[in-house]
Structure formats: C-alpha cells, structure tokens
Image (cartoon, rainbow, N blue to C red; front, side):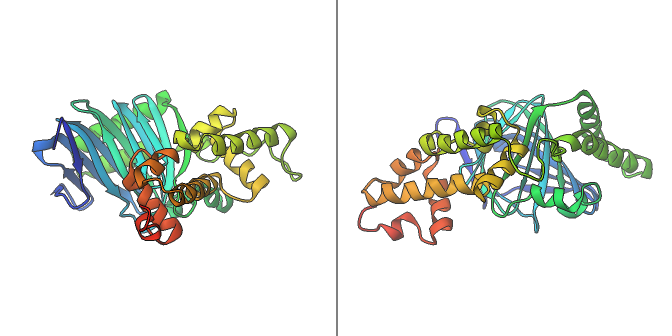
Length: 320
C-alpha cells in the first residue's frame, strides 16, 4: 500500500456473514474502510446485490466472474462513482443517478473506487433463463456475446426505478424473513426490470427486411474509421455509438449486418493486430499497451495471451 493506493487481489480475504439461507454480506477488511455487499437470491436466476463502499484509500479491486453462465447486470447508481475495466479494455462507468446495463460471461477485470468517496449501488443480476420469461428467444440471444461485455445502456435513472431501488436497499438492511417482506422484495425487483425493459430489448422499428438505410451505413462506416484511427484512446462501444449518434443496440445490430462481426470483437481484433505489429517492431509491452488503448499493461497481457494463445514475452522473448 503506497501513497493512498491499494490493489486488492483475487486471493485476498473477503469476510462472509450468512444472514439467512438466501442472504449474505460480503465485507472487505476494516483496514480498507467500510466496504460491503449484501447479496440476496430472490428466485432462480435473479439475485440482488446492494454495494456500499467507502474505502480509506484509492482502491483497485481485482474481480473475476463466478457465475456458471452468462448474466445480465442492471446497476442502479445511488451515490458516488466507480469504474470497471475488463481485461479486454472495455470500460464501464457507474454513476449516481444513472442506470447501467451490461451482459457478460466469464470476465476478469478491475473495479476502481476513489479514496474516502462513498459509493452505493443496487444490482439486479439475471440469467438468460430468467429473462426468457419476459423476452422472446431472439431478443435474449442478441443480448449475450461470448467472452465479451455487451454494454446495453447507460441512462439517467427514472423516478419509478429509483423508488423501487431505494425500497430494496431498505429491505436488505432490515433482513427480515417473513413471507410478506420477501414478496415485497420480489415485487420491487420485477418493477425495476419492467421499467427498464424498453432499454433492454428496444423494438427494432428502424429495420426492415431489406437491411440498413443509407444514414445507418454512413454512421457505421464512420464508427469503423474511428476505431482504426483512435485505437489508442481506449474507446468503448458505448462511447463510439454515442459519437455517431446511434443507440447502443441499434449500433451493434447495424454493425453486424454490415460487416458480419460484433463491434466489440472487431475492436479487440484490430487492437491485437496493431499490438502484434508494435511488439514486432521492438516496443516494450507497457508502451504497446498504452498505444492500443489499455490503461494497465497487465490487462493488455491477459487479453493478448487469450487472443493469440501466447503471452507477449513468450512470442517476442528476443525483443520484449
């Protein structure tokens, strides 16, 4: 621990307090500050997490998905700000007053929390099987991409979702087990999901059987050029879609229709091919990481190794 910065590894101890058969509290060491997550299993495929972090130091927390299958995470930002960067350099922001919706499978990354800043968030964690009760098969399939984070939405929180989120936070703190209390928790969680269904699975009104219109094609080509020319900027799919004036869902569907590849996969591919050329030219790993949009060389090394099957050091031992 130096200069007010602490990196919390995956192997460091988290303390678990079992509240009931369905609820538990996961705490960090008191030496790091007042940091905990209350987790409640509402039903099969639907879990609620209430996060409250106020670290004494700037905190970088290594994370790894422990879910056995893909999940959607709907995060309601209630207080403060935090950031997540995956090993594929995807950045996700969580901001008070906003709802962030993502899907992912097994992903490693780092969560960032500022020193002595309180962060409070409520998360709905949902499996495809649970979502299939409310969405059709085609809608569910378009939400989940293997090995990548699908950034679905980052929008101001509605009054309806905020009311139900605050009610859920209050109920988790009470930790009662009576049937009426459990029913209310279920209702609040489903009410948030219902309020956000339009963001999760928007109706594809702008598409027809003939494909894309001229404006869509222009926007997607502009986005592709941006990915290539600004590869060092750490661009995310959310940022790119906003810059070309398209919502994230429409951008991804349009990109796949035009180029036959998910834009997240394409962005990773051009980063890795540029990285290979830079490493071959003799640049160091850290230099290459920054030039292809990674803040942290370790994250770049993990992504490179997964993409090529060998680490930069193993592939270029005579140069790196």
